Length: 177
Image (cartoon, rainbow, N blue to C red; front, side, top):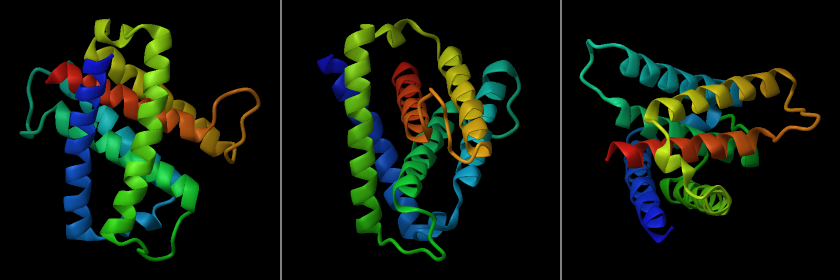
């Protein structure tokens, strides 16, 4: 489990670095996005990964890794939006956004460690394509929850689904490295 923790941290460090660079380029313009818009961005990334996995020919020179990074970062943005609400205008400095990013990545890692303990690192035996499918399944669940105005009867809420997508994407990146 210690190896998993190190690998996990390395992936988060890479994603965080890109998040900070994009904050420098664009600011927190993403703060105006409603949750369904973020969900759709994650969906686009997951669908692209699935197409890359199924197609032999690639017409754009980008691989799965950059798309998994997008899933991780958009999911963390969604967790921030869930907690803080949607802003009318960009309202976070890079420092403030990074503090929130770190908070949600830490909470999500703790969830992974707890589940990883209980499941015995079974994800290491999974294929990247299966992790992609699980992300797509979670996205369909999130879309249904969003359509139901965030209400669930017995199921996990939006936050747990975004956290699972982050963890699946990190597992996939560990596999790909």
